[in-house]
Length: 108
Length: 117
Image 1 (cartoon, each protein chain N blue to C red):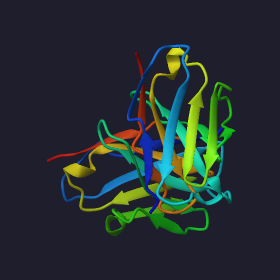
Image 2: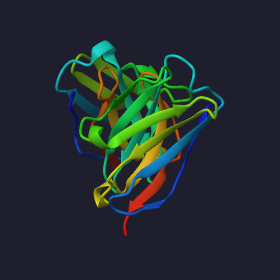
Image 3: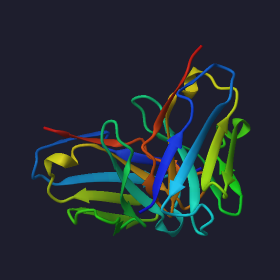
Image 4: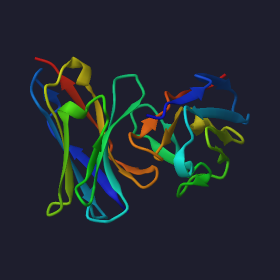
């Protein structure tokens, strides 16, 4: 199975700052089927990015995804108060589907 | 707008079978191209993919759970279901159903299942 490793584990930033989250795969993600999710406490995850770089419906353009093969990045250009949450990457290129362990973006 | 809703017991005894159903509205489980999926999240932990069923009935399960999992679909009710046998306390988690469209674009709100006697 494809193991996804996210870094850092925790990112401490202030509102207005730029957040850069990394996701590294143990092998190439087929078709760049790499997605990013945001999860807030007590809520289901929300799809942000699919296909490595396509924003899901209704997602603000401050969220962007990039990368291919084994290295992927989620960037939040300017953090809003509602962006402080846990973020997961996930691959659908091969079964079993797998998730990264998550990156927590917290207020500094 | 597609909506998914999990239902089932919130408490299951050890060694018994956990059974959950996901009801889909605003879309059809018979639609090609989607994998109807179960995901769980242990308290305070990350997300674990359990498995999926395709509209054709084909399934794929997480190898770590494969011996205990069955996912089925009832097209007449527009539902799909999860059965997890021989549960232990380690199966206590929030269980989500979701639609896999190359990313999980629609999710249920999740249901907490506790395994305890």
